[in-house]
Image 1 (spheres, rainbow over the protein chains, first blue to last red):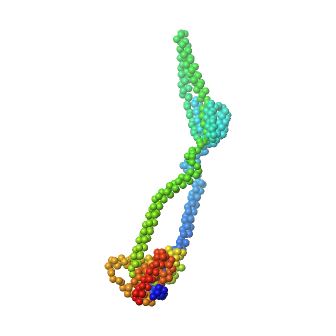
Image 2: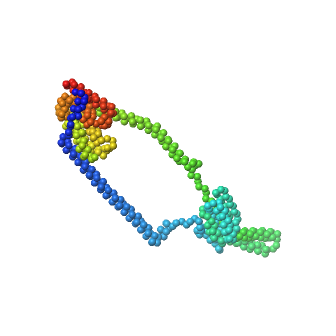
Image 3: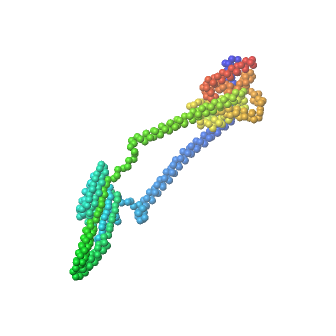
Amino acid sequence: MSQRDLVAELRAVQLTAPAEVRERVRLIAATAELSTTRRFLRRRSLLLVVPVAAALAGAVVLTRSSGHEQRTGLAAQSPPSPAYRAATATPAPATGSVPKALAPAPSPTRVQRYGATIGLRVASPGAVSSAVKQALRITSSLGGHPSSVHASAAGKAGTADLVLRIPRRNVQEAVTRLSQLGTITSEQVDIQDLQAGLDATGRRIARLQRDLATLRSEPQSTERDRAIAALTAEVQRLQRAEAATLRGAQYATVRLHVATAPPPAPTHNGHGPLHGIGVGAYWVGVGSVYALAFGLPLLVLGALAALAIRAVRRRRVDALLSRP
Amino acid sequence: MTFAQAAERHLDDVYGYLAWFTSDRAVAEDLTGETFERALRLWHRFDPTRGSVRTWLCQVARTVALDHFRSERRRTRREQLAAPSERFEARFAEGLSPDLESALRRLTAGEREVLALRIVLDLDAGTASRVLGISETNCTTRLNRALKKLEEALDVAA
């Protein structure tokens, strides 16, 4: 028999599945239809459930947000409690009047040495110059005078230090108006009571004068003249000191420091805007080298293992199928 | 195409392939049912762009048959069965001459498989080699060897 006849005979053989096998396969296919229908129904139910769930979630979110708005509205309508006001009070702007607690009024009845130090920040060197001029104008308008003025500007930075002598009765107003020349960065008020010292000096002068009167009533002698001269000199010294203290206490010393904002600290150490990209590329390169160094051998080993497993499996299958 | 349509259309092909492959019609009947059960589970993975349904079903059937062969070998080893089973006594297929049927029984399972795919199911070399997981050349070589073996067996019988 030739190969052609052989092939023809083999092709002539028609193998048909028995009826029971056909029935079994039909049952399996029917199960498939059923599961497909169930899947379809599940999908359809999902189509219904998902929008409903989304609508419910949306409703919950809307309800909660509207409730929040209602509460906010109620809070806005009802007067807030003092504690609430204290907790939510916004701080007063830095520029503006100085709180009176920090610039107390000088005592009208007692002699005091009044000193204040104010630090201000302004935007530019030009603003420093302008603030200096206004400070001098305020000082003169209140009957005072500058004791020293120092101003300097370099580039975008400027600074000025003023020592102003202002009549004690006007110092509170002066501090208030000077504080408005810029943003307050520091503030200090020093008040020293001089009344007790002056009273003591007055009592000593009175005692010395009584001693002086007693000495003058005694008989004249060299010793008495010398003592009178000494006491007279002491009384005059104390009176000069007392007068100097009173003169000094008439004026308050206000030290004003005006400066521009310090330049922002450099955020980078001399690198360009593309430095980050360069650093990123560097690390990507490093990672790639490591990946190649370690990953490539692993990849090759994996491929070899896969090939070996495949060859072994094929050999096993061949061995399995090599029997009749 | 639905699974039911595919099963209806290619049931005989799968059954024929398994009958030739196992050379046992009773086993082929069982394996056919098992093949379609497995195919149903894997139906979502079937990609029509990668091959026809018939090819895919043959691949599933081959996997089922190989599992059967493995379990049979384990069982045979365990039970120390040396004698050939009764299936050799059954008719291989209707319409075959006794000499050809005898010659077919002398072929290995692998040779019968390639005959089933290339001649009975009339698959082209590329498709058959894809089912077998071998190259086209290897497939053709295996087919020629099987035919030659058959021819020699028939000549001897004549």
